[in-house]
Image (cartoon, rainbow, N blue to C red; front, side, top):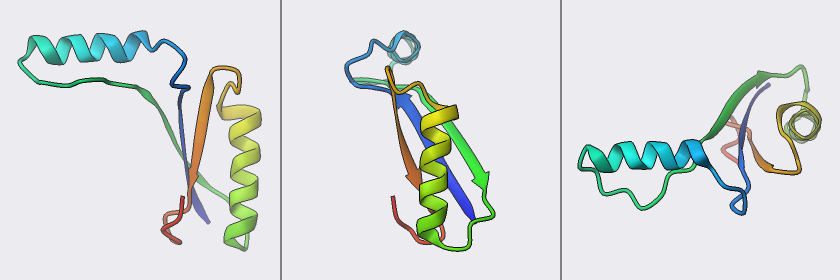
Length: 83
């Protein structure tokens, strides 16, 4: 089952890369109020149910893909259309 995991810095954590992107966009004439950058992972899991896939992806995201001190994550099951 395919699962997507989005990882980004928590809103309370400074995002210098996002700020640099925002500044570059402003120099090009784009009116962007804020930019936050993050990571995207697409996993193919052997789980047989959506709930099992979600639990497995959340464990992987918490233990491997993110730093829970400064990052947050979101798991999306595209087939189910849920987040």
